[in-house]
Length: 426
Image (cartoon, rainbow, N blue to C red; front, side, top):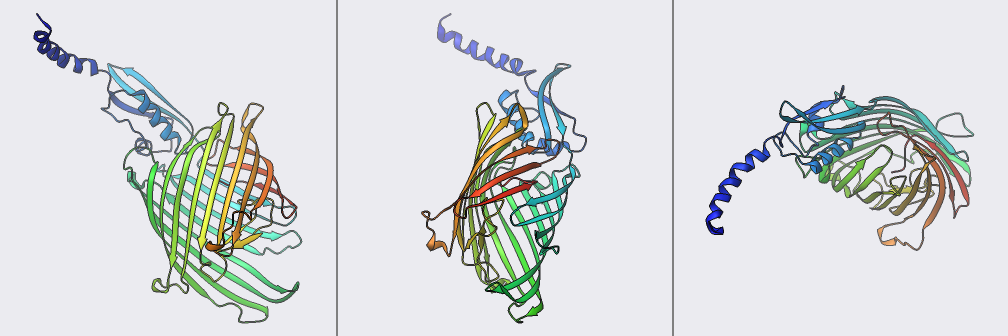
């Protein structure tokens, strides 16, 4: 039998062998273990491998990591089991604690400080819904009366009922005591109550699989400010409101590991207000951001970076839109050390594991940026620089909790600031 004569025979043989070879190499069941709170469908919607798919080690690992990226678990393991002549993919998770009463602490020894309480539920009904209720007071060290009080509620539901849509809502009430001075002499005092809210709906372009990739969204934000005159010159403020619509476009590909992150996220967001919407002001505000997390040296260290640019025509209440300075942007400087209707900012951090204790990392950082009168006045030759060092302790038993201690130096102002907080800058 020559080669051409053998060809039909080989094709027929291959057609018979393929089903036999495939038999037993197909995922016939996906089983979960350890998820006492989290619903199975929350994990299934992140997986790129399904029942009926051929066994694919790369897809299994991708699915395992996607479940870990939810941030709900201390660990996630994937095992392929042979049971009664069928392949079972077993996903074993170790859940974190989802309800957390958290003290809020932000201490700046040379200036002011804030304290309060935050109550978080990071996995409501086992559906990855997140609710946060917080109260915070800010004060100056030489005063016993809080000058700012904040009450805040936030709600976030990613992948609503397994869909590619995400929903978020927030409401905040802020009471400020305003003391106006001229030549260090008080000439008027007011109290301001500010009522703020926002609601948003976003959509992932990828309908199935891991919650990552491109997304877009829209939202509505409102703010109403009410003033009470206490003493001095009256009529300096009037009650007013703003209403704005928001659009955003972004990309996210972040991965959570036990003690660090890896990946990138970036995007643009624009808010526009106008009298036609019921706003007392016409305004716009556009922000661009880029974040990158890079593991180094067999994951014992990380280099993290964040870049931001903001452009506006003033804030929606007639003031400047941005202020830099403080523990979350330009460390080492007083809060709102520079302000304006445009800003540029870079934050760079190098973190390294301490003595084999993975939860605790030392950090060196620098913050570089400035605020400008307007978008056309941005000058990257005029930048403020802060440098410093600190510690990060990632509390792995809770969702997204890191204790931070920083010592920072503002080079231009020649000031040192110390920060003790329960959150990281980015």
